[in-house]
Image 1 (cartoon, rainbow, N blue to C red):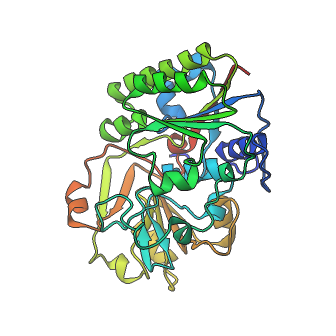
Image 2: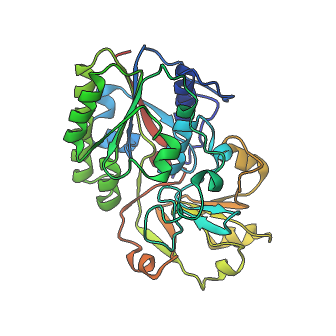
Image 3: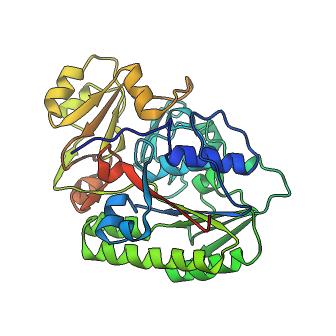
Length: 370
């Protein structure tokens, strides 16, 4: 597989975030920025709709969407945080699906705001505030002037989560929906009211690609259905400029490898592995680069300051960075089984993401009604 590094100095999801912040009157010291056109804008994030999936579904060439890089890890929590803070992963500190949090001495899932050992969502909120656990997650939506009208249209059930509230949940109005066509109806109602900024998030492509793989007919059909709804919206509301993108693509995985608690690797680490199945983040006081190169022979190993800078953009001294990053170069996924149930379920997902392959890193950037 060809690896693609995140492009923090050119057109990318990161520079799109910086452009939107600037459009809303919030200044960020960004490495790059896309100039945002239009008086009113809609940010559409199609979860999992990487350029590879859109090409397979016959959408990419038809609409001549540009392919740009997402950030690393190519994981929803990391990308959404970048999109709504206009900061790089190494600045905001959300480094994948699971994160090591020193103040808690534990690994925490930021999307669910819980530890991997807890099955519930937001199980930590009764004990500690999200802002204490992830202090560098500072949404620009909290800094815009009061005369700016903003709205979000998101799936029912995520609107009041701690992660949502910390990133995109501070809009003037929130609307929820049940399915993609309900999303179309709710978004239509919102767009009829002349907002300055509207965020529409659709998770359907990611969900089906995880289950059936990125190149299944089910994934292609879902992508076409979602894309039709978005383009219908854009054609209906010409007074808005639509910026359509994705958080990541997915890659087919045929080699699921479970790392168990009694694995030799665990004895070499300070905390269990965190990150994603295709972006394994490790903390240790030992020099284990040779061991990792042997153990993960089909993967790239990153450990130096320059390598971390290339992966995470900028490095905030208060962010708990890993000592080593392991990224598969083949169709492998590595899952640490925090709970016995996870060990039993390992291998059920056909599509994975988080890594640096073209399939995971290249996402569309399409501007409609510019």
